Image (tube, rainbow, N blue to C red):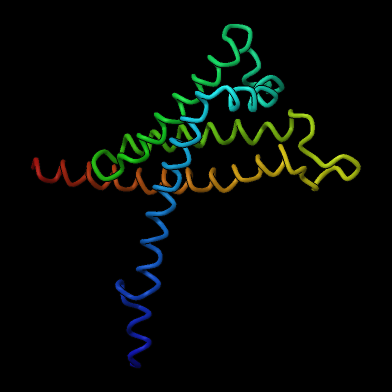
Length: 172
């Protein structure tokens, strides 16, 4: 067998290394985005910036009936920061990481629903599939974040079930 052939099948080949780096960037990039954007929710400009999305959402518009614009944004920020921290715990608590990822999946699905409820998502005069610069393209990025959350959920659930299996085996 050729040397190049053996390397491509090796778990330590360049493809494997890139995949591991990519997995790290996906997980901790998602963590960074969630925490960073969550922290921004505590600013006045971000609270006002998301008001149109929240106000038109069939899932979230009720919140302005019980909280102020700033309080709604802060609550969403707390959720995002919490989910980011939970996802970051993968190597110490994979089940908590999976729970955080599942929460992020739900959050991104709700965010993506804004494309159906928020005015101005589709470019005037063009309509679907032509996204407006803002808010359309802003929402489109959440599709990738949803994919990252789906991957981190699956990977953390696998890790949690294998660590649970090892714990039970060690108890026998």
